[in-house]
Amino acid sequence: MEQEVKTSSAKPSMLGMIWSPGEQFDRIRQNPKIWVPLILVSILYAAGMFLMAVSMDASYLGLEGMSEAEAEMVMMFSRVGVAITGIFTPVVVALISGGIYMIFIKIAGSDATFKQIFSMNIYILVIGGIGLLVNMALRAAIGGNPEIFITSLAGLMNSEKPGVLGSIELFSIWQSVVTAIGLHRVGGLSKGWAWGIAIAFFIIGIVFTLISNTLTGITGV
Image (cartoon, one colour):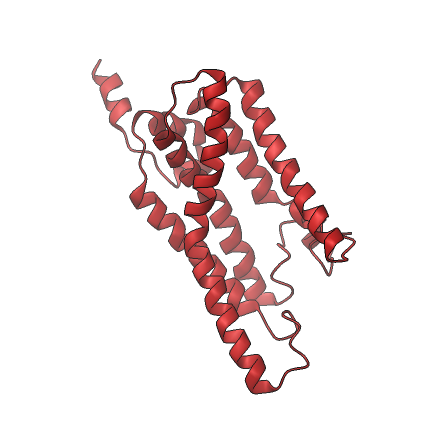
């Protein structure tokens, strides 16, 4: 009984999401945390987006035709905008995905709450944040298009544009796998439902990238 009480009151660990996500999800279901992990994840994303902003240059934004003063002003606003985006990205992603997950959870008849799912999403975003920080730190060091993650197929194949290959990326796949585990352990969905939803979201992301590339005239490969 004492061990059971200790387990149910244990706080989930953000770093634990890397090597023991299942254990952290069990803790989240019993003891969901939001504000502190949300702040930490927002800082992580802001740092990654700041490094992305540092890696941006006039050619990246297509400002070659502007004067040096005009280009510098646009670059300044763009960098600030990118960094600010990083702060709000986690909460927006966690809310939207949480709302969609709750639809499936209610259909499945699970008793999981939105607080549990929102907390789960925040902890899952740690993986994406680490991926962003690692890739942008490498881009800031070695140069290249910051839109292309080095850990993606586009990065491995030295593509000039991210395209569809940019969507097939190590940390994104890792995050999808962990999401499936979370939907099963926290959301109470069957393994089939959990993996189906996680895979569907991953494929939808690729489809949106393909549509975006088509609309902008980019072939993607």
